[in-house]
Image (cartoon, rainbow, N blue to C red; front, top):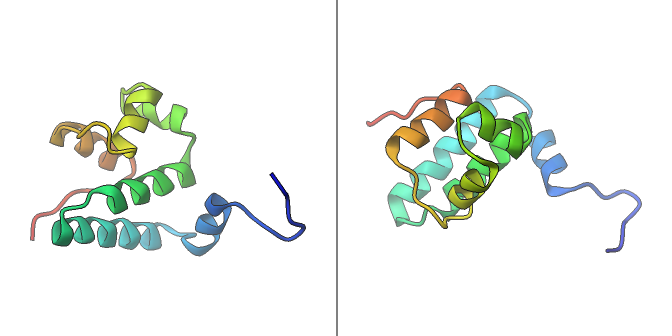
Length: 101
């Protein structure tokens, strides 16, 4: 893979743009709203992955929510639909809640 002198990774760029809790909450809320509108969880899962990686490693975060790293990746990649209790644990660990409006 070619490395460019002034390039940064997608994760680094994300962390520069979304550098505070309020921005992260808004981003994840927007991604969830997109899911509600179009039924495609992929945008929400990707947003969830980026928010998790902005705070911890996937391995570390998975341990905090009592999942294996593979289980967490299966959810993030859309290979497994999480139970609402699992999603609630993930959001709680991120300091977020799920609201019905």
